[in-house]
Length: 386
Image (cartoon, rainbow, N blue to C red; front, side):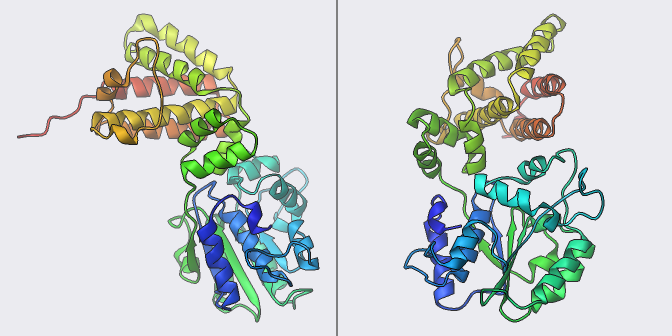
């Protein structure tokens, strides 16, 4: 992958190219960035730049034999390891080599994908992907061989957080003291979920989130209207992958706003038995909206809650969302979102998004979330003693 195929991240690209030119590339480097930050794409661009035989001032050439193979993700000296699971065709001891065709196909579609996107792509969304001890055996074997074409062998491990202890222990020595001209590129989203023994043997390279302006520009360049691009960028907090998904949906900010206002009014009155039927009907309506529209709405609701808290504590200048209509105003709503309930509400909304991704029954999910949020909205702010 060429660096110029990756949105933004100019400073990161320059730092990586400088490492190569100054011949100070660490033997094991961890690309740490949140979901949708482009850390995988950045690692792929770095691998291609290292192997390119005709490096340009600001990128790999894209034309040499090495670049041609890297652009197809088929270079024999670029090895991939990623979480996998058993499938109807791979019934036992799955390893990454069993899924290289699917891996390359998804990379060509969208290098910003999440772990759930990958697991869904190979048809096992109800399972947990992992990197097994069998995978480690193959890594050690592959790296014991000499390079086929390039001077350097590169082992790219995506989501090392999913490596079990046995697999990690088998790799510790080779990561710490790799064979000559061998590089490890680890691409992770969570430093906390990585095994400390693996983490301590890598050099950290932090990949920043995208700014709202960069997400907006990226979407506009892909044919999204400026208004919709700005609305989406306000929702996704720098996550290009989520931005791409939302851009494909027809549901807009106005529709989300109407759903939100109705939902909050029903939640406020949900403790009265006579209004529960209305909340059930609303949940049935949301259940028919489609999974991506449901996720879009929950993202929207999370951001409105954030704005309400900012408004309540006098930081209105940082608000992003535009919600109103039907006599709803942020001035009236904000006092109900405070330090005693805001984090719990956001957590409920985040969990709802996660369960939607895992194909939960959306009618039950929205009804359950509604009752929990109704209870939290009625939670009083404790008075601070004078």
